[in-house]
Amino acid sequence: MSALANPQRTLKCPPDIRSALAVLTCAVVAACHVATAQAAAPFAKTQATGFYRMMVGDIEVTALNDGIVPLPVDKLLSNVSPADISSSLARIYLGVPVDTSFNGFLVNTGSKLVLIDTGAGTLMDPGTGRLVTNLPAAGYQPEEVDEIYITHMHLDHVGGLTLNSQRVFSNATVRAAKTEGDYWLSPAKMAAAPNDARTAFQNAMNSLDPYVKAGKFYPFEGDITLVSGVRALGTHGHTPGHTSCRRESGQKAGHPRRLDPGQLLDPHPPSCPQGARVDPLSGAISETKDHRTRTE
Image 1 (tube, rainbow, N blue to C red):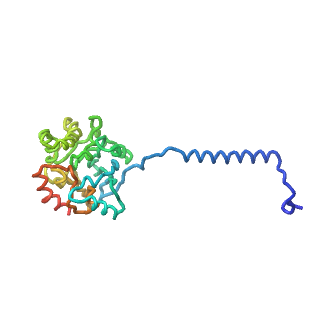
Image 2 (cartoon, rainbow, N blue to C red):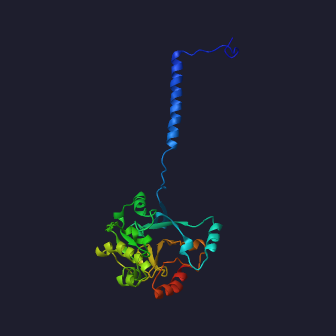
Image 3 (cartoon, rainbow, N blue to C red):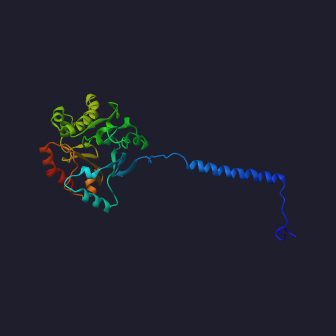
């Protein structure tokens, strides 16, 4: 009679098979303990490498993330109530603060490597300053950058130029609108500014001075082609010499647009970020006659 036919009968395993089963059982138990230990590993708290690459005609453009900062848009925007801000954000499933991405753009024309803006470096939130590490991850080194175009001299655009008062991009020349440099790099303008605005001037000076002293700062005037495939367009208003860079190649063109928090609420808002102080004359005139006609 077989063992299946007789439930009272017990099968006996040879000693060597019993030993093998015991070892296998211990291995399974050990594996379970290992899996449990891995689940208790510390949080990584980092994101994947921050760059995105695309072609504009025959020009390669790489967006380099400098970091993400939660912005208190209810404190930054004027001429709009906090209730309107909250309700508008709620419609797109956002709240206050708004996580805002800061980026620079690396343009490879085939003959020149151009960086448009440099991020905040160490001047802002601990969540920024990553552009200089994302650049090598994208396949380039700081010393390979030929030219840097600064759209305007707020800290989140110029802070990455230097580290410990040294040039991060040792072989690069820096270019910005003359109007912008004349404003932010002027000790007289800083002395005339409100106390709470003077830090912005000092940040710009600290970031640009090493390049100025090295003879690596070349301001420009007007709408000009900075390098083949990249043209500067004056979009004054946010700052006195704010400039956009138009990428042109073949039949394709594009702008590295900045998205202010207010644009999440209204593409053409009446509000503007507080603290974006400019000369009353140049700021007011360029905002109405220049900036709006170019962007709308």
